[in-house]
Amino acid sequence: MAGPRIPSSGKRSRNASSDRVYFEFLPRGAYIKVSAVHEGTGTEVSIVGDARVTQADLQRIVLRKLEKTMAEQTKKRR
Image (tube, rainbow, N blue to C red; front, side):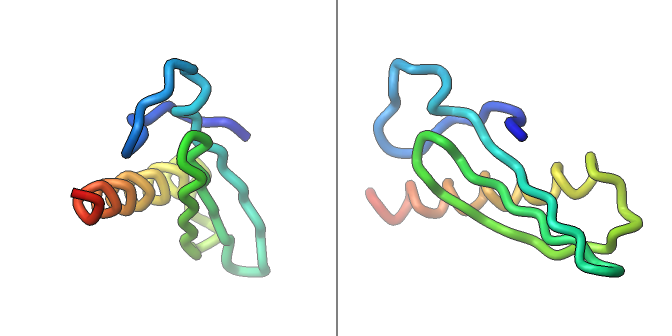
């Protein structure tokens, strides 16, 4: 499932699709694992949340984690 676009870290591609983020939701009983992958960089993060939380809230949380991770990677490259 493709989601919102976020700025990629490192070199910018002229292809807008490189800023796409893909989400995966894997329910496991009372919990759900949510992964987000940034298409342009291949950066991937995951969270585990309560299955009763809305998909939109879980997506927002994992997207924030992805943005933070990518920002930290950019700082390390400088």
